[in-house]
Length: 237
Ligand SMILES: [Zn+2]
Image (cartoon, rainbow, N blue to C red; front, top):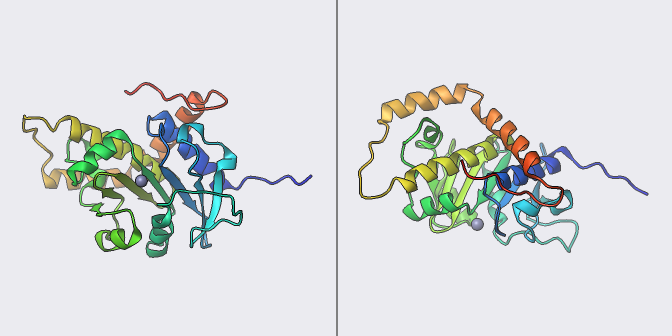
């Protein structure tokens, strides 16, 4: 009997799926997470057939930069192409998260980066691309070096990081920033952080360890909410 040891990247994708699910970002089919294999033109990602809440290690599969698996029966999202598209364009990106989370998708309908309504929103200040579609041909001209988020109007969003801790930590933070923006988009004009203030906070956050801590929390939450079969999301804070 051959015993195969799951690769570290495969386990990280599963942890991310469960952490996203614990945060209410995984109830439906359609999101995808990937982690690049360092030094290779390959990455691990999740199959299409399960939600983040349901994901198991066997559902995390290895693809090449054409989006192909060695196993012909593996079915991934038809929208997977932007993962290897972005990895090809951005050597600094080692992990990618895409969801259709409720607040993320609502924000995408506004077609703008989240307004600066909280310190954590500043991660995305001037670093959010708006791409008309999820094809890499639409993302490439919209995305600049250093961008950490991509909004696809009426669809959802993508976050990017050097590591899965960054990409997933940013996604949960983006969801929070979007929730603030969308839920405060009523009749009343809400004051937003001035640009110079936002830039100063962004610099401060870059030095902080917040995204790693956010990731550690995601992993703990994912484990806590997993009942042995599925992740039962924690109630929204
Ligand atoms: Zn999508």
